[in-house]
Amino acid sequence: MAGPGQPPGGREAGRVRATRRPDHRRAEPRRADPAVTTPGHGDPPARRPVGGRWGHRQLLGAVGLAGAAVTYEVLSRAFFSPLHVPPLTAVVPEAVELLTGARFWTATGRTLLAAVQGLLIAVVAGILVGFAVGSVPWLLRVTSSTLDFLRPVPSIVLIPVLILVLDVGQITVLLVAVSCFWVVLFQVLYGLREVDQVAVDTARSFRLGRLRRVVHVTWPTVLPYLGTALRLIVSVALALALTGGLVMGAAGLGELIWSSQESGESTGMYALVLLTGGIGVVLDLLARLAERRLLHWHVATRREWAR
Image (tube, rainbow, N blue to C red; front, top):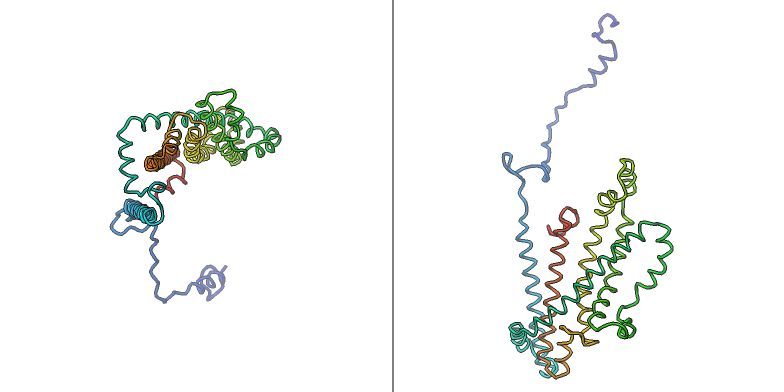
């Protein structure tokens, strides 16, 4: 009970009231958080236009490409013979003429067909072998040394052996498949290592079967690694499909480039090389678009395409 002359609540209450002194200092206004504060009355925050950044990047790329073209033109005319290094002003008209003929498109179709066939074999085989090996820890430990030994071996060394039993076109497809297979296989193995074991145990506790665990837990983790593999093997497949024509004479762009070089048509050869490079750029762009469409839900893909 409060004594005489003491406020109700006892000494403790009086002590508490004594500590609550009014603060006469001027309160500073709170700084606005730019991430959540809106410029107007309920207006959405202003965002930096993405189109401007994309256009600026493309403009810089075009300037760099034009600079490389001018440099090549000057060097080819100043230091080299037109018979060996023709200027770009002669190569571009030849490339345009090739685009209007059926010979170029026929060779392009054969080269792309061999590349696509090898890619499909590599993707299917890489996924199946990767899941079979990566899902069994003891099998991965047993085969890891063998895989690391075979991976650096270039597929082109198989040509002397394969040429005895297979057709030239089949060898080209097999070269593409073997080289791309290792990329897909190791990307799948890398993805399987990143699977969250807690998520797997949670799915198992909910009595999800093995197939449903693979579809809902494992596959979404491995899929970004497969997207990276797809972007990498597209250029590899095109290069090896061209190698089949350059080395073994398989019908396609490689054989067309080789025949132009043998006949002394340096301008036509450079035009074919230029067009082949353009095909590679288009294929790389298509692979990136496919990766973006396939992984539109992934945060890394959204961040990359928002730059």
